[in-house]
Image (cartoon, rainbow, N blue to C red; front, top):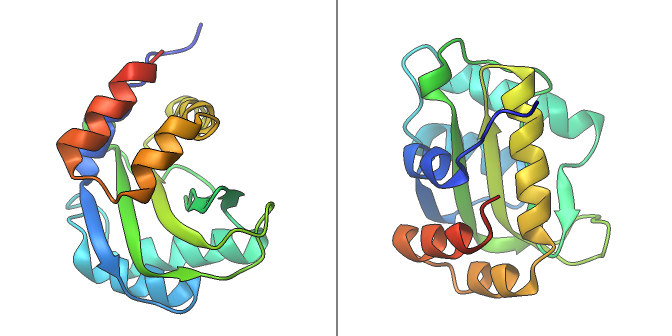
Length: 155
């Protein structure tokens, strides 16, 4: 049985960040680690390092201009601190992606257990198949607009 994952709640907790600078994923992650509000238990340097280590293993770009950066393993201990940080880049990253489209948006997943982690990735993959959702993302929506769009598809 799968646990219910509320993407809207996780995104609300993680927040949306706009015009994040960086010419590489590493630069973006460094800047993001200094911008975002992280749980008390999570050191910004550790957050940065974990994202970079995962990116070095394999790109987190999934196509359609989106990447889903995430540590290889859950790095939070508190269930209620889990979050998705949505990041819109100042300049798209022209890196190798499955469909060759530059990355303009990141959904950074921070979880406390493997079950939630996998469910979040699955739910995000479902959303990213919806062209209307991608079209909304391209407008760099405010939080309430993004959450309204997600609720249309929330399983």
